[in-house]
Amino acid sequence: MGIQGTGNCRGAACALIIAAVAANAALCAPAQAADMGGTANAAVVRPNTLIKTDDLDFGTLLSGPTGGTVTIDPVTDGRSAGGGATLVGNDGRRAIFQGTGGILLITVSGSTSVTLARAGGGAPTMTASLVRAASTGGGGIALLGGTLLPSGVQAYYIGGTLNVPANQPAGAYSGTFTLTVNYL
Image 1 (cartoon, helix red, strand yellow):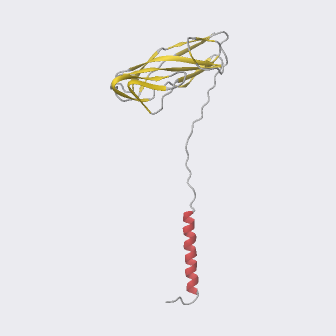
Image 2: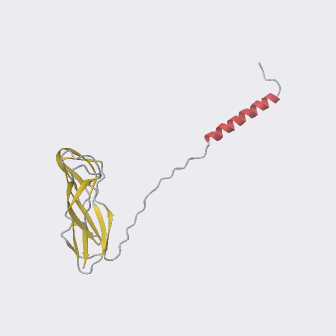
Image 3: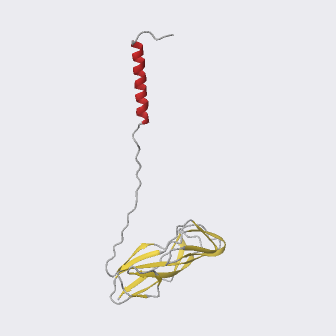
């Protein structure tokens, strides 16, 4: 069976062209945009001041059938575990404070331990012994005995060892400690 007349062919050809243009337009739909927020940070230090830029975080861990420890090194920021504690992920970090000031000496003191309690209670507390380190004026980081010579901006680092009891209940634990810097 053949096509008779040219009028039908033109209508069929127009219909095919319209269908092709519509299909092509569907394939070329506008792109979708996605927004994602970010964080920008800055630390401003004034003479004879001290600010905290990071909290001490022992990270996520598992408590085993025997007690163990999790340590954050204040110099290297490394994290390790011993005994019945097992590290999960790589989310621990040392505390960092920034300061500037002093004419002759800077003396540093503060908490030597911190007690961590579970949010909502119902679990034994955990205790961490704290270790301080510092760097001044672009020098290396060293464990801190208590007195520094002033030199530009100082960074103070707090690490320590968290004692984790056997079979410690799951939850988020936190506690507070102090760092005192006297600018003389």
